[in-house]
Length: 200
Length: 263
Image: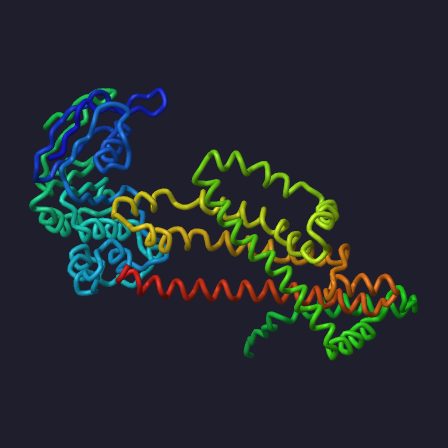
Protein backbone atom coordinates (compact mmCIF):
# COMPACT_ATOMS: atom_id res chain seq x y z
CA UNK A 1 0.00 0.00 0.00
CA UNK A 2 1.19 3.49 -0.83
CA UNK A 3 -0.62 6.36 0.84
CA UNK A 4 -0.31 10.12 1.02
CA UNK A 5 -1.83 11.57 4.18
CA UNK A 6 -2.25 15.37 4.16
CA UNK A 7 1.14 15.77 2.53
CA UNK A 8 2.47 19.30 2.27
CA UNK A 9 5.79 20.26 0.70
CA UNK A 10 7.19 23.76 0.53
CA UNK A 11 10.32 25.22 -1.01
CA UNK A 12 10.98 28.49 0.78
CA UNK A 13 7.79 30.50 0.55
CA UNK A 14 6.37 28.47 -2.33
CA UNK A 15 4.01 25.66 -1.42
CA UNK A 16 4.09 22.95 -4.08
CA UNK A 17 1.89 20.28 -2.49
CA UNK A 18 -0.80 21.15 0.06
CA UNK A 19 -2.69 18.68 2.21
CA UNK A 20 -2.52 16.05 -0.47
CA UNK A 21 -4.24 12.81 0.46
CA UNK A 22 -4.41 9.81 -1.82
CA UNK A 23 -4.23 6.02 -1.66
CA UNK A 24 -2.58 4.40 -4.66
CA UNK A 25 -3.78 1.03 -5.90
CA UNK A 26 -1.71 -1.86 -4.53
CA UNK A 27 -0.65 -3.02 -7.98
CA UNK A 28 -0.71 -1.82 -11.55
CA UNK A 29 0.67 1.18 -13.38
CA UNK A 30 -0.20 4.76 -12.50
CA UNK A 31 0.82 7.75 -14.61
CA UNK A 32 1.11 11.14 -12.92
CA UNK A 33 0.40 14.03 -15.26
CA UNK A 34 0.33 17.76 -14.88
CA UNK A 35 1.87 20.95 -16.22
CA UNK A 36 5.61 21.52 -15.98
CA UNK A 37 6.72 22.61 -12.54
CA UNK A 38 3.48 21.59 -10.81
CA UNK A 39 5.24 19.17 -8.44
CA UNK A 40 5.33 15.78 -10.16
CA UNK A 41 8.99 15.15 -9.47
CA UNK A 42 8.59 16.52 -5.94
CA UNK A 43 5.83 13.97 -5.36
CA UNK A 44 7.92 11.16 -6.84
CA UNK A 45 10.85 12.05 -4.58
CA UNK A 46 8.52 11.91 -1.58
CA UNK A 47 7.24 8.49 -2.69
CA UNK A 48 10.85 7.30 -3.09
CA UNK A 49 11.77 8.50 0.40
CA UNK A 50 14.44 10.84 -1.00
CA UNK A 51 12.63 13.84 0.43
CA UNK A 52 10.43 14.39 3.48
CA UNK A 53 7.15 16.28 3.56
CA UNK A 54 6.91 19.48 5.58
CA UNK A 55 3.55 18.27 6.80
CA UNK A 56 1.62 15.03 6.67
CA UNK A 57 2.98 11.59 5.96
CA UNK A 58 3.88 9.19 3.16
CA UNK A 59 3.13 5.59 4.11
CA UNK A 60 4.52 2.74 2.09
CA UNK A 61 4.31 -0.97 2.71
CA UNK A 62 6.54 -1.87 -0.23
CA UNK A 63 9.77 -3.61 0.69
CA UNK A 64 11.93 -2.50 -2.19
CA UNK A 65 11.75 0.71 -4.22
CA UNK A 66 13.53 1.20 -7.54
CA UNK A 67 13.77 4.56 -9.28
CA UNK A 68 14.60 5.61 -12.80
CA UNK A 69 15.49 9.28 -12.42
CA UNK A 70 14.79 12.04 -14.89
CA UNK A 71 18.57 12.45 -15.30
CA UNK A 72 20.01 8.97 -15.77
CA UNK A 73 22.48 9.17 -12.82
CA UNK A 74 24.80 6.52 -14.19
CA UNK A 75 28.22 5.90 -12.67
CA UNK A 76 30.46 7.47 -15.33
CA UNK A 77 33.47 5.17 -14.73
CA UNK A 78 31.51 1.91 -15.07
CA UNK A 79 30.34 0.44 -18.36
CA UNK A 80 26.67 -0.31 -19.08
CA UNK A 81 26.80 -3.88 -17.83
CA UNK A 82 28.58 -2.90 -14.63
CA UNK A 83 26.16 -0.03 -13.99
CA UNK A 84 23.49 -2.72 -13.74
CA UNK A 85 25.56 -5.33 -11.92
CA UNK A 86 26.34 -2.88 -9.17
CA UNK A 87 22.71 -2.71 -7.99
CA UNK A 88 22.22 -6.47 -7.98
CA UNK A 89 22.71 -8.67 -4.93
CA UNK A 90 25.83 -10.81 -4.66
CA UNK A 91 25.60 -14.06 -6.53
CA UNK A 92 23.10 -12.70 -9.03
CA UNK A 93 25.40 -10.64 -11.15
CA UNK A 94 26.37 -12.88 -14.03
CA UNK A 95 26.29 -11.48 -17.53
CA UNK A 96 23.61 -14.07 -18.34
CA UNK A 97 21.28 -12.51 -15.73
CA UNK A 98 21.70 -9.07 -17.20
CA UNK A 99 21.59 -10.00 -20.88
CA UNK A 100 17.77 -10.27 -21.16
CA UNK A 101 17.25 -6.85 -19.57
CA UNK A 102 19.85 -5.23 -21.81
CA UNK A 103 18.29 -7.03 -24.77
CA UNK A 104 14.76 -5.88 -23.92
CA UNK A 105 15.94 -2.28 -23.79
CA UNK A 106 18.04 -2.70 -26.95
CA UNK A 107 21.35 -2.08 -25.22
CA UNK A 108 23.09 -5.42 -25.85
CA UNK A 109 25.47 -3.91 -28.39
CA UNK A 110 26.55 -1.21 -25.97
CA UNK A 111 27.03 -3.37 -22.89
CA UNK A 112 30.77 -2.66 -22.66
CA UNK A 113 30.45 1.06 -23.43
CA UNK A 114 30.94 3.77 -20.85
CA UNK A 115 27.97 6.12 -20.30
CA UNK A 116 29.91 8.96 -21.93
CA UNK A 117 29.78 7.04 -25.21
CA UNK A 118 25.97 6.67 -25.11
CA UNK A 119 23.30 8.92 -26.59
CA UNK A 120 20.73 10.60 -24.32
CA UNK A 121 18.14 7.97 -25.20
CA UNK A 122 20.53 5.10 -24.50
CA UNK A 123 21.45 6.60 -21.13
CA UNK A 124 17.79 6.81 -20.23
CA UNK A 125 17.21 3.21 -21.27
CA UNK A 126 20.20 2.12 -19.20
CA UNK A 127 18.75 3.95 -16.20
CA UNK A 128 15.47 2.08 -16.83
CA UNK A 129 17.31 -1.21 -17.21
CA UNK A 130 19.03 -0.65 -13.87
CA UNK A 131 15.72 0.01 -12.11
CA UNK A 132 14.10 -3.03 -13.73
CA UNK A 133 17.08 -5.26 -12.86
CA UNK A 134 16.94 -4.13 -9.22
CA UNK A 135 13.43 -5.49 -9.16
CA UNK A 136 11.60 -3.40 -6.61
CA UNK A 137 7.93 -3.95 -5.87
CA UNK A 138 7.49 -0.17 -6.05
CA UNK A 139 8.89 1.09 -9.33
CA UNK A 140 9.10 4.87 -9.77
CA UNK A 141 9.90 6.22 -13.23
CA UNK A 142 10.45 9.93 -13.85
CA UNK A 143 9.70 10.63 -17.52
CA UNK A 144 11.07 7.30 -18.74
CA UNK A 145 10.17 7.99 -22.38
CA UNK A 146 11.18 11.62 -22.74
CA UNK A 147 14.28 10.96 -24.87
CA UNK A 148 12.89 8.06 -26.90
CA UNK A 149 11.29 8.06 -30.34
CA UNK A 150 7.82 6.57 -30.91
CA UNK A 151 9.05 3.34 -32.50
CA UNK A 152 11.45 2.64 -29.64
CA UNK A 153 8.78 3.44 -27.05
CA UNK A 154 6.49 0.92 -28.69
CA UNK A 155 9.21 -1.74 -28.68
CA UNK A 156 10.19 -1.37 -25.03
CA UNK A 157 6.70 -0.75 -23.63
CA UNK A 158 5.90 -4.48 -23.27
CA UNK A 159 8.99 -4.94 -21.07
CA UNK A 160 7.88 -2.07 -18.84
CA UNK A 161 4.31 -3.36 -18.66
CA UNK A 162 5.55 -6.78 -17.60
CA UNK A 163 8.27 -5.52 -15.28
CA UNK A 164 6.40 -5.33 -11.99
CA UNK A 165 3.30 -7.55 -12.18
CA UNK A 166 2.84 -7.93 -8.42
CA UNK A 167 3.71 -4.39 -7.42
CA UNK A 168 3.00 -0.78 -8.20
CA UNK A 169 4.65 1.26 -10.95
CA UNK A 170 4.29 5.04 -10.79
CA UNK A 171 5.54 7.04 -13.72
CA UNK A 172 5.63 10.70 -14.60
CA UNK A 173 4.82 11.67 -18.14
CA UNK A 174 3.67 14.68 -20.16
CA UNK A 175 2.31 12.55 -22.96
CA UNK A 176 -1.10 10.81 -22.59
CA UNK A 177 -0.04 8.41 -25.37
CA UNK A 178 2.80 7.14 -23.18
CA UNK A 179 0.32 6.39 -20.41
CA UNK A 180 -1.93 4.63 -22.89
CA UNK A 181 0.95 2.65 -24.31
CA UNK A 182 1.66 1.26 -20.87
CA UNK A 183 -1.99 0.77 -19.98
CA UNK A 184 -1.56 3.12 -17.04
CA UNK A 185 -4.24 4.73 -14.91
CA UNK A 186 -3.81 8.47 -15.33
CA UNK A 187 -3.83 10.78 -12.31
CA UNK A 188 -3.73 14.53 -12.80
CA UNK A 189 -2.07 16.73 -10.23
CA UNK A 190 -4.70 19.42 -9.73
CA UNK A 191 -4.68 22.77 -8.02
CA UNK A 192 -2.00 25.35 -7.41
CA UNK A 193 -0.57 24.32 -5.04
CA UNK A 194 -1.43 20.73 -5.85
CA UNK A 195 -4.03 19.44 -3.40
CA UNK A 196 -5.54 16.47 -5.24
CA UNK A 197 -4.79 13.61 -7.61
CA UNK A 198 -7.75 13.24 -9.91
CA UNK A 199 -8.35 10.37 -12.31
CA UNK A 200 -8.94 11.06 -15.99
CA UNK B 1 56.34 14.73 -54.35
CA UNK B 2 55.64 13.20 -50.97
CA UNK B 3 54.52 15.38 -48.09
CA UNK B 4 56.09 13.68 -45.07
CA UNK B 5 55.62 15.42 -41.74
CA UNK B 6 58.53 15.37 -39.34
CA UNK B 7 57.55 15.16 -35.66
CA UNK B 8 59.99 16.15 -32.93
CA UNK B 9 60.03 13.96 -29.82
CA UNK B 10 58.07 15.38 -26.86
CA UNK B 11 61.23 15.93 -24.82
CA UNK B 12 62.94 18.01 -27.48
CA UNK B 13 61.74 21.48 -26.47
CA UNK B 14 62.06 20.96 -22.68
CA UNK B 15 65.63 19.75 -23.26
CA UNK B 16 66.36 22.71 -25.52
CA UNK B 17 65.02 25.05 -22.84
CA UNK B 18 67.18 23.46 -20.10
CA UNK B 19 70.25 23.67 -22.34
CA UNK B 20 69.53 27.34 -23.00
CA UNK B 21 69.33 28.25 -19.31
CA UNK B 22 72.34 26.15 -18.34
CA UNK B 23 74.22 27.76 -21.22
CA UNK B 24 73.27 31.21 -19.95
CA UNK B 25 74.42 30.27 -16.44
CA UNK B 26 77.71 29.01 -17.83
CA UNK B 27 78.18 32.21 -19.88
CA UNK B 28 77.56 34.48 -16.87
CA UNK B 29 79.82 32.39 -14.61
CA UNK B 30 82.55 32.38 -17.26
CA UNK B 31 82.22 36.15 -17.88
CA UNK B 32 82.47 37.11 -14.19
CA UNK B 33 85.01 34.44 -13.39
CA UNK B 34 84.31 34.48 -9.64
CA UNK B 35 83.75 30.82 -8.70
CA UNK B 36 83.24 31.72 -5.05
CA UNK B 37 80.15 33.72 -6.04
CA UNK B 38 78.94 31.79 -9.08
CA UNK B 39 80.60 28.52 -10.05
CA UNK B 40 80.21 27.15 -13.57
CA UNK B 41 77.74 24.31 -14.25
CA UNK B 42 80.70 22.05 -14.99
CA UNK B 43 82.24 22.75 -11.56
CA UNK B 44 78.90 22.09 -9.86
CA UNK B 45 78.35 18.83 -11.72
CA UNK B 46 81.93 17.79 -10.96
CA UNK B 47 81.37 18.49 -7.25
CA UNK B 48 78.03 16.67 -7.33
CA UNK B 49 79.80 13.67 -8.88
CA UNK B 50 82.32 13.71 -6.02
CA UNK B 51 79.55 13.99 -3.41
CA UNK B 52 77.63 11.08 -4.94
CA UNK B 53 80.54 8.83 -4.04
CA UNK B 54 80.46 9.76 -0.35
CA UNK B 55 78.39 8.16 2.42
CA UNK B 56 77.49 11.44 4.25
CA UNK B 57 75.80 12.72 1.09
CA UNK B 58 73.51 9.70 0.89
CA UNK B 59 72.85 9.78 4.63
CA UNK B 60 71.84 13.44 4.36
CA UNK B 61 69.58 12.68 1.38
CA UNK B 62 67.95 9.72 3.14
CA UNK B 63 67.44 11.57 6.44
CA UNK B 64 65.92 14.64 4.77
CA UNK B 65 63.70 12.48 2.57
CA UNK B 66 62.39 10.42 5.48
CA UNK B 67 61.76 13.47 7.68
CA UNK B 68 59.95 15.50 5.05
CA UNK B 69 58.04 12.64 3.43
CA UNK B 70 56.80 11.58 6.85
CA UNK B 71 55.48 15.12 7.33
CA UNK B 72 53.73 14.95 3.95
CA UNK B 73 52.22 11.53 4.71
CA UNK B 74 50.91 12.80 8.04
CA UNK B 75 49.41 15.80 6.23
CA UNK B 76 47.68 13.47 3.76
CA UNK B 77 46.17 11.43 6.59
CA UNK B 78 45.12 14.38 8.77
CA UNK B 79 44.04 16.44 5.76
CA UNK B 80 41.71 13.64 4.63
CA UNK B 81 40.30 13.28 8.14
CA UNK B 82 39.77 17.04 8.54
CA UNK B 83 38.17 17.29 5.09
CA UNK B 84 35.72 14.55 5.96
CA UNK B 85 34.95 16.00 9.42
CA UNK B 86 34.42 19.54 8.13
CA UNK B 87 32.09 18.34 5.37
CA UNK B 88 30.09 16.07 7.65
CA UNK B 89 29.75 18.45 10.59
CA UNK B 90 29.01 22.15 10.44
CA UNK B 91 30.32 22.51 14.00
CA UNK B 92 33.65 20.93 12.98
CA UNK B 93 33.79 23.22 9.96
CA UNK B 94 33.39 26.30 12.18
CA UNK B 95 35.84 24.93 14.72
CA UNK B 96 38.64 24.05 12.30
CA UNK B 97 38.25 26.72 9.60
CA UNK B 98 40.20 29.39 11.51
CA UNK B 99 43.02 26.88 11.85
CA UNK B 100 43.09 26.45 8.07
CA UNK B 101 43.22 30.23 7.58
CA UNK B 102 45.95 30.50 10.23
CA UNK B 103 48.08 27.81 8.59
CA UNK B 104 47.71 29.51 5.22
CA UNK B 105 48.53 33.00 6.45
CA UNK B 106 51.36 32.44 8.96
CA UNK B 107 54.84 33.19 7.58
CA UNK B 108 56.77 29.94 7.40
CA UNK B 109 59.94 31.51 8.86
CA UNK B 110 58.08 32.54 12.04
CA UNK B 111 56.74 29.02 12.45
CA UNK B 112 60.20 27.53 11.90
CA UNK B 113 61.69 29.63 14.70
CA UNK B 114 58.77 28.94 17.04
CA UNK B 115 59.01 25.21 16.39
CA UNK B 116 62.73 25.39 16.98
CA UNK B 117 61.98 26.68 20.47
CA UNK B 118 59.21 24.18 21.15
CA UNK B 119 60.18 20.85 19.62
CA UNK B 120 63.92 20.87 18.93
CA UNK B 121 65.80 21.11 15.65
CA UNK B 122 65.40 17.53 14.44
CA UNK B 123 61.61 17.59 14.40
CA UNK B 124 61.11 21.02 12.83
CA UNK B 125 61.43 19.99 9.13
CA UNK B 126 58.86 17.22 9.60
CA UNK B 127 56.40 19.60 11.26
CA UNK B 128 56.96 22.33 8.70
CA UNK B 129 56.38 19.90 5.83
CA UNK B 130 53.21 18.78 7.63
CA UNK B 131 52.01 22.36 8.15
CA UNK B 132 52.67 23.35 4.56
CA UNK B 133 50.96 20.31 3.05
CA UNK B 134 48.01 20.08 5.44
CA UNK B 135 45.95 23.11 4.26
CA UNK B 136 46.38 22.11 0.62
CA UNK B 137 45.31 18.50 1.17
CA UNK B 138 42.50 19.54 3.49
CA UNK B 139 40.99 22.21 1.24
CA UNK B 140 41.35 20.14 -1.95
CA UNK B 141 39.76 17.03 -0.48
CA UNK B 142 37.03 19.06 1.17
CA UNK B 143 36.22 20.63 -2.18
CA UNK B 144 36.24 17.16 -3.76
CA UNK B 145 33.80 15.86 -1.15
CA UNK B 146 31.53 18.88 -1.64
CA UNK B 147 31.59 18.42 -5.41
CA UNK B 148 30.65 14.73 -5.27
CA UNK B 149 27.61 14.26 -7.48
CA UNK B 150 24.54 14.41 -5.19
CA UNK B 151 22.55 12.61 -7.86
CA UNK B 152 24.86 9.61 -7.66
CA UNK B 153 24.61 9.59 -3.86
CA UNK B 154 20.81 9.57 -4.08
CA UNK B 155 21.02 6.76 -6.62
CA UNK B 156 23.22 4.84 -4.17
CA UNK B 157 20.65 5.45 -1.44
CA UNK B 158 17.79 4.14 -3.59
CA UNK B 159 19.68 1.05 -4.66
CA UNK B 160 20.82 0.38 -1.08
CA UNK B 161 24.57 0.60 -1.62
CA UNK B 162 26.59 -0.41 1.44
CA UNK B 163 28.95 2.22 2.86
CA UNK B 164 31.95 0.34 1.45
CA UNK B 165 30.38 0.21 -2.01
CA UNK B 166 29.49 3.91 -1.89
CA UNK B 167 33.03 4.85 -0.89
CA UNK B 168 34.65 2.57 -3.45
CA UNK B 169 32.47 3.29 -6.47
CA UNK B 170 31.43 6.91 -5.90
CA UNK B 171 33.58 8.77 -3.37
CA UNK B 172 37.05 7.50 -4.26
CA UNK B 173 36.73 7.98 -8.05
CA UNK B 174 35.17 11.42 -7.49
CA UNK B 175 37.95 12.46 -5.12
CA UNK B 176 40.87 11.16 -7.17
CA UNK B 177 41.38 14.29 -9.34
CA UNK B 178 41.29 16.48 -6.23
CA UNK B 179 43.73 14.17 -4.45
CA UNK B 180 46.12 14.21 -7.43
CA UNK B 181 45.97 17.98 -7.57
CA UNK B 182 46.62 18.19 -3.80
CA UNK B 183 49.61 15.85 -4.08
CA UNK B 184 51.07 17.82 -6.95
CA UNK B 185 50.91 21.14 -5.06
CA UNK B 186 51.58 19.88 -1.54
CA UNK B 187 54.60 17.71 -2.20
CA UNK B 188 56.75 20.32 -3.93
CA UNK B 189 55.77 23.06 -1.45
CA UNK B 190 56.32 20.87 1.62
CA UNK B 191 59.63 19.61 0.27
CA UNK B 192 60.94 23.14 -0.33
CA UNK B 193 59.67 24.39 3.04
CA UNK B 194 61.10 21.31 4.79
CA UNK B 195 64.54 21.94 3.30
CA UNK B 196 64.25 25.65 4.21
CA UNK B 197 63.50 24.57 7.78
CA UNK B 198 66.61 22.38 7.71
CA UNK B 199 68.71 25.30 6.51
CA UNK B 200 67.46 27.48 9.37
CA UNK B 201 67.52 24.80 12.10
CA UNK B 202 70.57 22.89 10.85
CA UNK B 203 69.62 19.44 12.16
CA UNK B 204 72.33 16.78 12.02
CA UNK B 205 72.74 14.78 8.78
CA UNK B 206 70.48 16.77 6.48
CA UNK B 207 70.55 18.42 3.06
CA UNK B 208 69.64 21.71 4.71
CA UNK B 209 72.64 21.53 7.00
CA UNK B 210 74.89 20.77 4.02
CA UNK B 211 73.50 23.83 2.21
CA UNK B 212 74.00 25.95 5.34
CA UNK B 213 77.60 24.73 5.69
CA UNK B 214 78.22 25.52 2.03
CA UNK B 215 77.12 29.10 2.65
CA UNK B 216 78.88 29.37 6.03
CA UNK B 217 82.29 28.19 4.75
CA UNK B 218 81.94 29.69 1.26
CA UNK B 219 81.91 26.26 -0.35
CA UNK B 220 79.84 27.57 -3.23
CA UNK B 221 80.30 24.43 -5.34
CA UNK B 222 78.81 22.42 -2.44
CA UNK B 223 75.99 24.93 -1.99
CA UNK B 224 75.04 24.62 -5.66
CA UNK B 225 75.52 20.84 -5.76
CA UNK B 226 73.26 20.30 -2.75
CA UNK B 227 70.69 22.76 -4.09
CA UNK B 228 70.72 20.89 -7.40
CA UNK B 229 70.16 17.68 -5.43
CA UNK B 230 67.14 19.23 -3.70
CA UNK B 231 65.68 20.31 -7.05
CA UNK B 232 66.24 16.93 -8.68
CA UNK B 233 64.72 15.13 -5.69
CA UNK B 234 61.71 17.44 -5.75
CA UNK B 235 61.09 16.67 -9.42
CA UNK B 236 61.64 12.95 -8.86
CA UNK B 237 59.31 12.77 -5.83
CA UNK B 238 56.52 14.62 -7.60
CA UNK B 239 56.85 12.58 -10.78
CA UNK B 240 57.14 9.31 -8.84
CA UNK B 241 54.11 10.05 -6.67
CA UNK B 242 51.94 11.04 -9.59
CA UNK B 243 53.02 7.99 -11.59
CA UNK B 244 52.18 5.75 -8.63
CA UNK B 245 48.80 7.40 -8.10
CA UNK B 246 47.90 7.19 -11.79
CA UNK B 247 48.93 3.56 -11.88
CA UNK B 248 46.83 2.95 -8.78
CA UNK B 249 43.91 4.75 -10.43
CA UNK B 250 44.15 2.60 -13.58
CA UNK B 251 44.39 -0.55 -11.47
CA UNK B 252 41.40 0.60 -9.42
CA UNK B 253 39.33 1.21 -12.56
CA UNK B 254 40.12 -2.30 -13.80
CA UNK B 255 39.17 -3.75 -10.43
CA UNK B 256 35.98 -1.69 -10.32
CA UNK B 257 34.91 -3.17 -13.62
CA UNK B 258 35.43 -6.72 -12.45
CA UNK B 259 34.25 -6.13 -8.89
CA UNK B 260 31.03 -4.37 -9.85
CA UNK B 261 29.86 -7.90 -10.47
CA UNK B 262 30.62 -9.13 -6.99
CA UNK B 263 30.25 -5.98 -4.88
